[in-house]
Length: 107
Image (cartoon, rainbow, N blue to C red; front, top):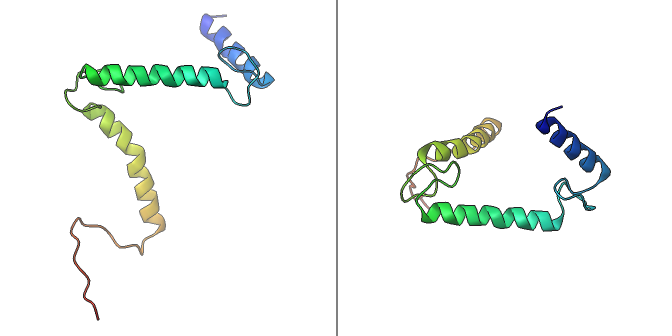
């Protein structure tokens, strides 16, 4: 059994028992409040460090002034594009936004 297999089994056992999958204390979700706070703080620190050094916050590649590189921005936009397409498909009668707002004539 590989280390990854052991980790997956431990995760599954803890999750099934209602324990935090990271530290093993009783929890209502997958992680306890303490572990969630630690993960959030680490993510915030990583974000701030990468932005300050001109790296992409997603992949760590150099990207200059923006927070995300072009590839990560496009990857982040894909789900939004898919949601928009599904909404437009479900609401064909909705007016399309062409980028130009024309004032409506008042009666």
